[in-house]
Length: 456
Ligand SMILES: Cc1ncc(COP(=O)(O)O)c(C=O)c1O
Image (cartoon, rainbow, N blue to C red; front, side, top):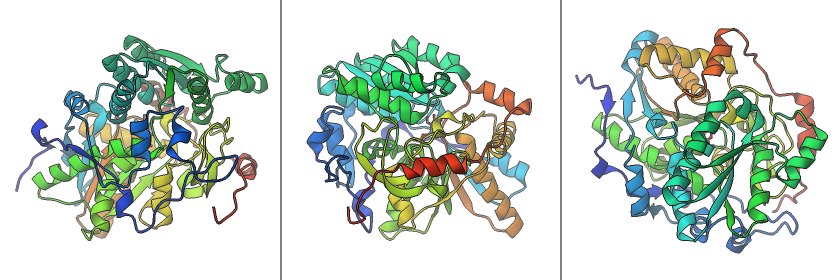
């Protein structure tokens, strides 16, 4: 029996296409609506914010979309990423399960986010854009776009959720190293940021607020476009290189996953690892359980409402049907900044409605406990976001032990936690509290959902 630990794919075998799950779905996703007319929006409605190539990907029904050569060329700086067999963790857990993890932390920013940052920067550059505004929660996305912007000569402005900005000062320095400007959000630089600060001067910020600020800058400056690090169809599309590589690497291991897991903030790393396997199953391939793991403190998939809502707090975006906690919901300042988003990707939400994926929502200390156990066995300190996937994978492996079955478990280790050591320090000091979401605040946020007739 082989005892291989790392399954390494040759650069020459890196996938040349992104995979679009939409044509394989049994029902198309609901349309995106204009908030004023409640009619479906068309590609031109997005033009102030995104270059047309990305808008076309957003609405594409092609199964495969070619990855442009210059993007593939840059991907080769860190891709294909390794697939590990977690043999030491398996031993520590005394589980008969075969645990595999796809490690996206080897990228320049330390997570999966550059997979879409490089693609988005490329298409913006092709369209003659000079400047991009964006938001960041954990700092991973801002770092990724800063890196990609430097490669394509684009100016990058990042609104970083204030609680993360304070928790992770080195993320800002990282972005500045690539020439980007990073400001804490809410900021005095936009109308929306000023309005939030006037109401709540000590606001922690949220992804919904930071998105509004970045969208406002793009919508009011002709030379500036907006980029989003998750949620949108084209972002999820760009991440599917992860699952496609994992599929090839599992072939090298002569194995196939019984369970695939990822953590979910906006849904992109989860989609990246899961969609290629969901597609195979929908085309008549093997049954694989697909499991999304989200924080108990911001549980959009498990406790949110499936409804039309705004993607941002300032209500500047169109309406998308998704699992939402309400666009004004302010998640507590827990230590997984990338998972503090009120909504879930419309495509991931649609898959949940179709019964194609499961979801669960563990508490943050249980996730850190899993992350520490993983680090002590495998030698990699996961990002706090990734700890949710680690928790899910360990729980599955323990269940295998209890039931005496050997299953193959694949999860996305979507980033390392090297900039997140304050969170680990707080965890070791017993300072992390387990926060469930606030029922009353949520009820208020959900009461503010836009009113959309059911047939829309
Ligand atoms: C390491 C890491 N994982 C996960 C996420 C959540 O995003 P998504 O659900 O789009 O993968 C983030 C977002 O910032 C992140 O930085």
